[in-house]
Image (cartoon, rainbow, N blue to C red; front, side):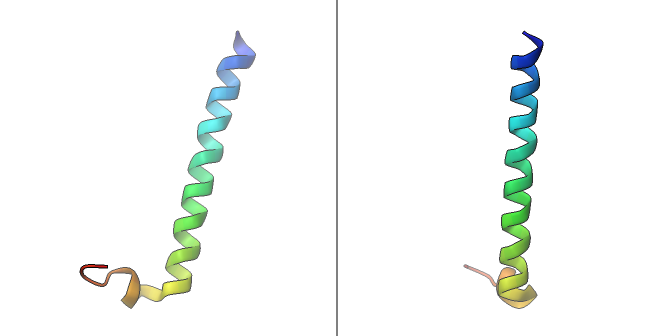
Length: 40
């Protein structure tokens, strides 16, 4: 039971890291001007 709960928690942490890294890479690739461009 504890292993299943730990797996779910680790899964959420990994997903959060993947999303954060993806957004960071996109921000670096696009730059600040393109990242906050209206209607993009």
